[in-house]
Length: 368
Ligand code: IPM
Ligand code: MG
Image 1 (cartoon, rainbow, N blue to C red):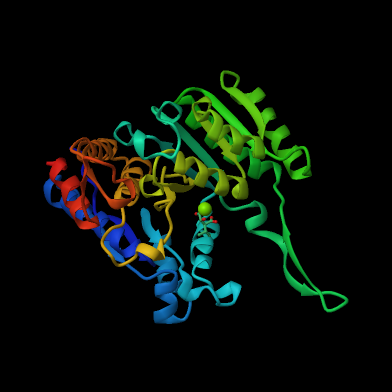
Image 2 (tube, rainbow, N blue to C red):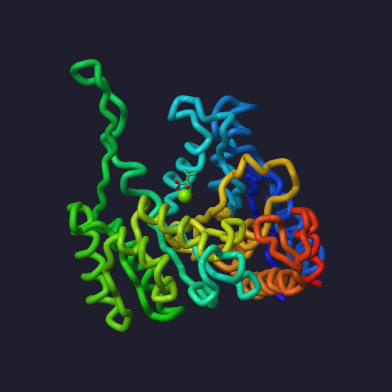
């Protein structure tokens, strides 16, 4: 059996339902330590609004350095209405953006898989979504999220102007395209690259560089270019035409929410944000459920912990080289769904509604 030698995992529960779902993740890590003689050491720290309340800033240097020093960071969620009126640079979300940028986590992987047990939870017809398995590869450290100049400035006539800058360089485009192509090789060899090359120069460059990389290094991959608005439409019309979708930071943000909803619930989707592999084969990484803080259901023990638990499974696979354990965990989630257990977000007639805690316990019982 593979043994993880005192490997450091940092848990950042954050805000809203974050602490509730990360609590279930923690239980599973403890289970692995005890029953699979893995030796994870994990710490828990504040981030986002929780950190603002305690320390007046969304992430302290101490927590930032701890995340640099961990093999995998698992985050719950950042943000909520309580902190909505803070000045932009002090908002909870800045912590997340800082981690992404400074850990150089340029590749965001967002799988959208429609579990067979849940085809009826989607708002789309079962035949459109059953068997759906898409991987969205979103660029995460560039584009309009980080481009300069940015800001809000006064202009004439008592007006103000808001400015953001969207830009990408060749190397930024190539390194994320490479991630998409490499993933496609292990899947159905198909990449759809999205941009707005009909209106944006950065989109023209995106299209050209992705194509050039394919022609040079990935001849066997089927590459299609699609305008991002068309992709949004095609995702609803015929989502199963896609295998890997490659998109920039902003389009990837939107397309991944849309793809998530095809699967029935945002409560099911994990994500991995990855940097480059270093000389020792180590990779910086942050794992988080796609769902966000969901303040409306926070504190009620009804949130779905599956997205967070599957984020742990991605961490086992991508950061910790524990594929066997990751598969065990994925299978446990499937078994619980087979048994008909459902949190409120995926509840349907004839199934058994359970709480966040019950769902975590049930998954653990299936690990055994
Ligand atoms: C996401 C979220 C974030 C983003 C927010 C919380 C900053 O929507 O991870 O998709 O826009 O990237
Ligand atoms: Mg988003």
